[in-house]
Length: 63
Image: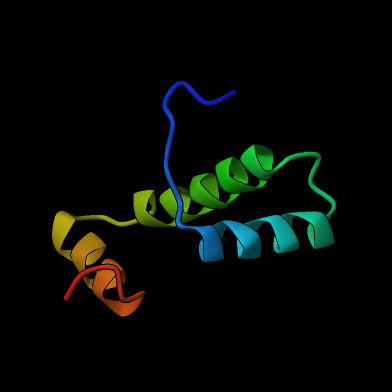
């Protein structure tokens, strides 16, 4: 499913596994893919790069 490999630290991976299991995903990869797709979809609804930056700041991804 993944064309690239992403490394996650052990603690984060444990959380991802926990929540993907709770949500009923068939795999961690499926959960991560779905989560990233949703976040990117929200960003793509923006009309400008400035709006995207504001959203990313609001989510704490950039300062």
